Image 1 (tube, rainbow, N blue to C red):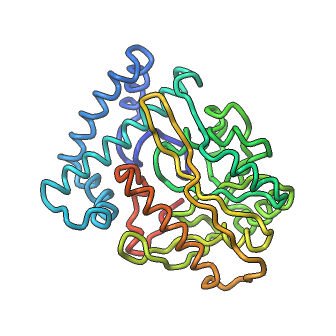
Image 2: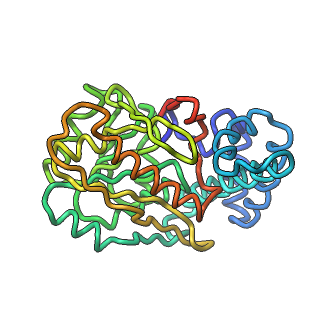
Length: 304
């Protein structure tokens, strides 16, 4: 979830008129034509924009450490193309309506059982796949849903609200104490709270170092601290696209955090590490779906 006004692009790539052209193309010719153009644009940017190669390099160097030269360039194109096609999908969903894709929440019964414990549910996801479409799958859950995210005042609403057909409560990470009081209150009411596990947020976004893809990274531990304070279970969910017209959100892991762990970051390292392992397993199957375009291994958490 990126801060600021939501655009269907990597920050700094694509002028507004180019985005408008894509939207018009989707409306007139549909997704297949837009995919073809997105592939061409991805290839152009991969070959001509050092900034694109630089943003993709940290992740690809750790996911495919043996690849260099042409192999690394091909991986950069695949990652960029996947991102571009997902942006086409998200735009198509907004332009053509909710019937453009079917969504499915794998493990809904498991999540319902976790909610039945009466302590709320913490859902931790990542900057993988089309998270807006993935979030729409959570509409299948009955309780109110809060999401830690930041949007401009000019945004009418979060993009996944339009996809899901129901309201999500947005908690601003720049609000009082990083939004922690609001997050605690949601869990204490037995509701669902969603956070990103691969990037820290705002004033409440403390981090702990864990191993990820062969190197140390700093991951936020707020979700696990909240779980310890409230007794809420933590479900790790990642979105993926199993078919041309389908989006699914799958339960990758369930993490149980003991109560009373306190404030020390080190107490939460095992649970952040469990999340990192679940994300690694996901990326074994979907290696070109990781869109956290920051050098996590250099200690950068990014803007959000």
